[in-house]
Structures are given as structure tokens and as C-alpha cells.
Image (cartoon, rainbow, N blue to C red; front, side, top):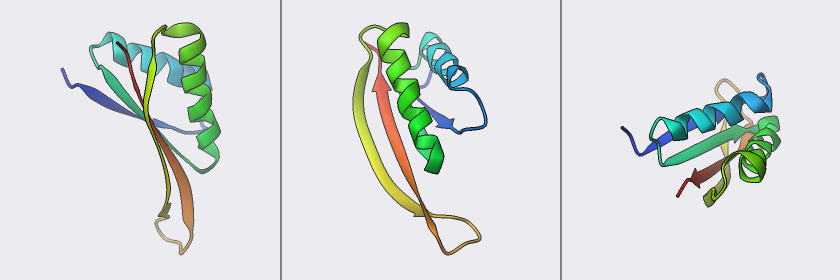
Length: 89
């Protein structure tokens, strides 16, 4: 089983769907998860991590938080993103 998994967070689904996806990934054997969100979805990714820490996975650790911006396909603008790497002991 892979050691880490990538979960892309968007605003199209409820936050609890991503919480469930994270719990499922940890139960499937992944030791680390990277939650990645862009633009308005950044707050949803933070909400997912806070919900996991507060009630679903005791001992959850935030390993790394990365922020930046990247170009958007088909436009000249950029969009901000966040990557939150979490691990379970």
C-alpha cells in the first residue's frame, strides 16, 4: 500500500465528504495524506483538518503546510493554493 495519498478539496462537495475520505484513506493503510485546495476551497481544506483533529482522529499531526499561487489554464491570472500534509501515528 502506498505511504501517502492526495486528496483534492473543492467547494462542490460538503466538508464531511472529505473528512470521510480522509478517515477511509487512513483506514486503508495510508500513513500520510496531502490535502490540496485552490482559491475559495482553501477554507474547506482547513475545516477538514480541524474536524479531523477535533473529533475523528486523535493524535493527528500536521506535518507541513505549503502555500503559493499558480497559473490558471486558459487565462493570464493566478490562483492561490494550499497543501496540508497530515499524518497519523
